[in-house]
Each structure stands twice: as structure tokens, then as C-alpha cells.
Image 1 (cartoon, rainbow, N blue to C red):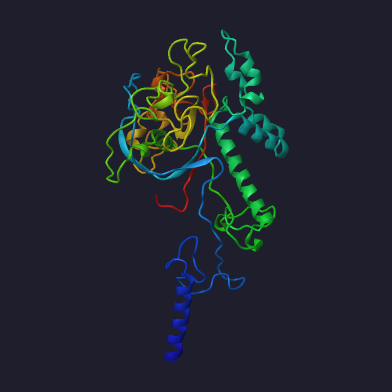
Image 2: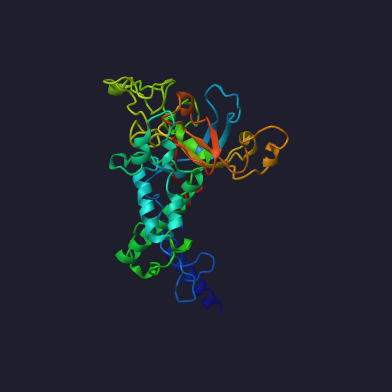
Length: 410
């Protein structure tokens, strides 16, 4: 009996070793054929635990990888508004993905197209941007009201007139649409995992079904970035790390090196690095020598990207982030992946206006960042922040999406 026992142990142990042959120890992508906890073969019959094939997530369409790490967040400019609402502090932000560019008009028109096909008329109507944000009683912006969203020449300009609530709805739709496309590719092409990886389609989700998280066929949710993620990505301090000593020897006022808003290098020397308002009445420069070249918004790939490869993290349009606004968030929130989702520890009642003063702060106001075509250079600094009601919109605020880096501890 002892001999049989030892032989059985040897067989199971050999199987476990064989199951890890692709790298020695089991990993998420190569878990092996047998459980290292029970020794039972995965999926040996219909009652056994089945481990779906999985390919490392490479990020969804439109996203670039942002390597996380330690950073000093907060305002690098003089606090001219005297708000003191973003004091410097050290935090750590986990790696994530972020849209390379702002969401453009063509992306929103695609969204409206599918909503018109698949949704109730009131859902489609609720998703329409407010094009009247361009209208001004004492300014002839009428052509933008009519043409900015739908005219083909504006296809790759950032969508505006979108509220924080509408931006969130778009992210939810985009998640569903991207995962639906991945599932259909898996069903139709015999691919396994998120972007293929061999095998037959017997593991693929059933036609028309929603894949489970465990299946390996779904991407995480597209969403608005947190304020900390957005500010970290805008700083792009990865471009200043010239050695592996972990010393942070400098800071950036803007998403690029230097203390100026013009390019100090090469053939583009003297050109502005972002689309912003240079001064009262000066949106673009003088005819024949236009500098930033944009009297309103601009092409989403205009101006050099920052060191993460992100375009227009300063200027063009401000961008919504997830966070509820509170002036003292910098001292309340955690120092790992900081985020304020509601009034926890700083209730809206603290800003109650019933005592004779007027406050705009409540749980329905959201932070926006980055500066716009209509803002002066002060607002281009990643540490500056403003807020607006989540159901409001303007011609100066757009957004981009983010996504967590799943299956990673950094």
C-alpha cells in the first residue's frame, strides 16, 4: 500500500511539473494542466474546474500604456486664484491605460449611429451634444453651432458640449461595443483569449452571450480617468528619468520640459506647444504667421505628444475626470491611487448655502483639468483644477477615456 501511495504521489507530482513546463512555475497565461492546490486536472470532465485560455491584455483600441509609480502631484504654478486646493504631496499611481487623444467628433458620431440603431429615441436624444455651447449673444459663432459636430472637416476635432454624465454614458457604451466586437471575432475566427492565441473556438463564448470575466474575452471598463491618473499622465515625468537611481531631480510646470510654452528645440523652435489663448483677444497670432494656428479647437493630433505619447494634455480642450470636487481633497484622499468618489469625510453639508452665503460645491460637481483653446497659459499646468456641475457642458470641455491595467501589481 505504501508503494502504491508513493507511486501515486510521484505521478501527481510529475503531472504538476509537466503542467508548469513552459516556465517552471505556473502563471496566468500558462496555468498548467493540473491544479497546484488539489492535483486535479483542469477540465478533465464536465464537472471539473475549467481554466479558460488567457492572453495578456494589451489595452483596448485607442489606448496607450501609462507606467505607474511615485509622483509629486499638486500645483507647480503660483496660486493666483488663492484657492489652495491642490497643494503638493507625494502619491503612488498604479499603471493604467489612457486614450492617446481626446475623444473626437467622429467617435461621438459613431456612438450616435449605434444608439440610433439599438436604443430608444430618448436615449439617442439624451446623447446629443449641446451644440448651442458655441452660441454667444455678442459673438458670431453661429457656424460652429451648425457645423462643428457634423461637418466632415471637423471629424478629428475634440467633441465638446458633452457633460460629465454624457461622457460616462459613452464610456459604458464603448466598453460594451469593444467587448462585443472581441467576442464576435472569437466566435467567427476561431481565436481564443482577447486578441487570439491559438486553439479552436470551442472555448469561445456562445453567440450573442455576454462573456464572463473569467473567460479571458473581456476588456476592463473604459471610464474617465481619476484626477490623480490624469495629472500623473499629463506630467509624464518618465521622460526625465535618465538613470535607475529613483531620484526625481526636477519637476515640470507643463507636460513638457522647460519653463516656457514655446518649443526650445530644432526646426520647431519658437512654436507653441499647445493650443491656448495667448492674451486678451489673441487666440492664434497674426495672419501670415499664425503660431498655435487654432482660433478654436484643433486637430486631436496637433502639437507634440508628451513622453507617454499622449496628445494635447495641455490646451485644446479641458477634460473631465472622475472625481467629485472638494477643495481639500489633497489632504483627505489616500496616497495610493487617490480618488474622491463622493463627499466622504467632507460632506456637502459643510458647504451648505442656507446660512446666507452661496456655495457651488456639492456631490454633483466634477473636476476638469488641462486648459483649453480659450484659457490662458496658467491653466495648462497639470496641477491646476476647476469644477463644474456634472450635467453641464461648454465649448471648452471634452474628455478622454482610461482603463485599469488588470492582472498587474504595478
